[in-house]
Image (cartoon, rainbow, N blue to C red):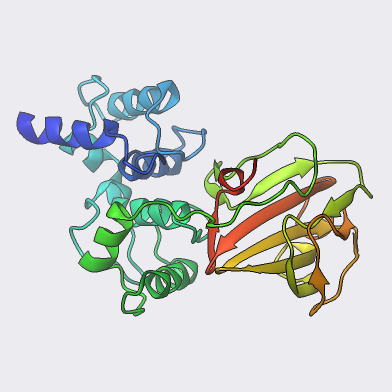
Length: 282
């Protein structure tokens, strides 16, 4: 039993090779959030807030308060404390620790599925299918051994092209976990009406209203599977089909769609996978 506890602890503190947070720690944080014990970001990092929440869970469950996430502590999390990722194929309707870890891995590999809650719903199934297709796997929507192994071993995708800044201003929110969700781009706060420039020459493939929350949106394709997204614009300065030059005005900063204030949401996708824009910017 002690050996099993040591193994679980090792899994929870190991840092993945690709540099993102640990999916096992993220699954732990999802379970702790569901019990009202953790209010921090599901980032896969076992920091002081996560450690304190584990101790509070152990205390409430009448367990030894040692901060070690062993079998009994996992059991105290209920359905969200089991089973481990890879123990079973994951498909629609599943609930558990493994689903939360899957959601976290999908998000970091460019396919966020909404709330990180350990529940395999329609959005998770769609994300799994999209990832499988992107990775060249059978796109059946079931996260079996091949899909999980690929997610665990594949490096995080990144843009093969260098880009220029669409706004020469400091970044607010970065790419990565935010609360119990995942932010798939960067946010650059700016005054409404500030000009937004094309980050690279390319073809405008979309320019209009996005009903999914981006509001006024421009999408430019640059080749090699790379597309840039400019969202929440107050106005749009290009039309679909147009050839946009590097630095050309694509629109102006606004707060349209799902937005709490004027800013540019800038997103980079490679063959449909969201990647960290900062890794492509100077």
